[in-house]
Every structure is written in C-alpha cells, then in structure tokens.
Length: 129
Image (cartoon, rainbow, N blue to C red; front, side):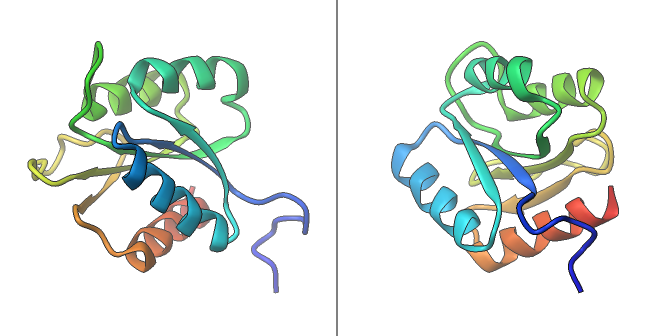
C-alpha cells in the first residue's frame, strides 16, 4: 500500500550541505530511495529555495557546520518558525546537539552517516508529520 502519496508525488527533501561531494552523494541516495531532492550549499540559498517552493518541501536535511550568515541549527530554527509543516533532520561531524536544541522534535544523525539510516529517518519524519 502506498503511504497516502499518489504515484507521482514523491516526498520532497531540501538538502543543505556545503561540501559538494557529500551533497552529491546524499542527493543520489535520497533520489534512489524515491525522494524528490532540492539542494542548497548553505542556509542563505536554502531560505531562497524555500521562499519559492516551501509548500513542496516536507523535510529539511541540513548540516550544522556551514559558511554563510547562519549555521544549520539557526536555519532549522528559522524554517520551523516560518514553515512549521517542514520536518527537520540535522547532521554534523562535530556537534552533538543537546535535547531541545533542535526545534520541533527534529532529529539528528551524526556524520559520517549511513545513507540507509538517513533514508529511514526521513521516511519516519514524512509519515509522522
């Protein structure tokens, strides 16, 4: 049984990662798992993407450590306030957020992450929201 998605409507994930190779690999993994993926290299680009298509995005998957005006936690906070329908998945190789630091029951995966784990987390976020 399909998870109440019509055949042509894949869940949309906004992937925010400043490291191009990591971003490409993650995007490939998510697309193979059946997600529609939008990519952004930093929080500023991610917000610009959301300005134009926030209705389509169901999950924000962001790294914490990025150049630019805000890091991934700041981005998650901003997204949660402006677009509360978007679920949050945060990753980092250097930080382990404390409980409550990720807004809106967001989830965390440490880097290097296993793509199967990320796919599973996103699937759970999409079905629970």
